[in-house]
Length: 560
Image 1: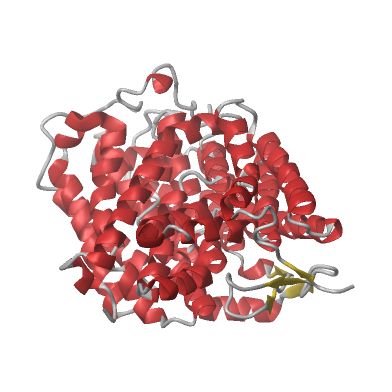
Image 2: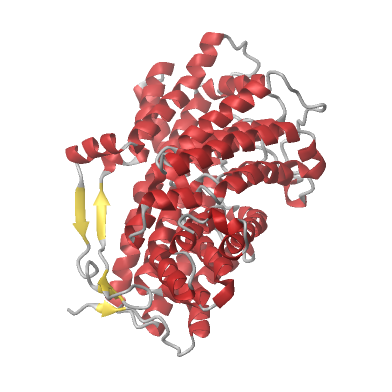
């Protein structure tokens, strides 16, 4: 059987072809936001539409199409679904044995103001997990912690998603930029430096935006000194590390500095009024929501001793250590050496050819399923749960029973993730993503803005800044060269713009709804975060426009 070459303009008009290519995404968004379908049904419907469009309109052979979808589904369950399952399991374990309540009280000991808790947990603590592992871990962890602290489900879900933006380009120890350098041939350290001259502006802005989204403008003004400390103490290390050390530890170092600075600042400064509401201010859809009730086995009003606090934090400390270790190259290589299974998908591997202008020369696409379960971050999380259970005295029977119950609880979320990644892989292998990308590339002088929005679209489609960089990195480089722009600027813009799409991709929304126990409400979350996502993405695009054309911003361009 001969390889199939992708077709990017089957209808003779790149605009019309792009609109048709966007039908699967439109199906998913309409089903979630307006038809209020459950996420797994919306994702399945979008996948069916994508198969029809790819086969009937774009000429993709049907057997290749379903193989691409199947590979995506498997890749969705491992590693993404594996992370979600095990982080929710860890959270449920700590709720069941009462340690989460003790940890909750200890956080309130740092500050009882809900706005400051958001800064500490959703932004700074979440950034640490993004830097160490990425791939849904930060939203799962912070969403679970916030719901345990009493935040309403919509607040816990939506705010965790908004907070998980500025750190994403350096997530998983720099994986998105490592992938971007690989597909573009551009220097990794130049890309790291360029992104580090874009995102620190938003590392300063996002904490203000986060508290404004939660408490309104006046509520934000009440804690502006703490927000400023949080943003500056993250943005400055982010710039310095990205420009002078590389992309690997940017988020980890910046998050630790930010958490330390905020905690120390709160020892000498307190807000005039303590904000106790856990619902979104001025948002009617949140007015009647109640936070998920803690487990009946949680220890309410129990005296919190230092030993109890340490024991309650132990599973989360172990989680941080495990996630960080699993993110290092040496540990990954060691675990992969113990067991790794690479499966080239028959009938798909090397059977698809990308052609110009998406790539410089025809290139066959690899299609392999990598089952390296020992080095997957979810396995590190499972180990943390096991060690945490040992430390808390959880018996083996209760441990196993809780795992089975968790698997049942997240079953629909796992199905959604599988369907969404099936959609993402099919979009990539069929060339639907490239068709939409070429439509963006036809925007001429406005390309810095629309190229940035292309990165946003890529993450919204795939759920991953890494995947978006792989999909569109080469296109960004080629388009920039054709338009006389800096390839480093536009490749970096793909990643920086992409981070704002993270909050609206179905995978992240499902992770958030699962972590907060708000099943079947993914459309509510999407409606809430969509404005924040597109507004922040446009702001990134405007910054890139300034860096492309307007001094002194042009002096910020690496090599410019």
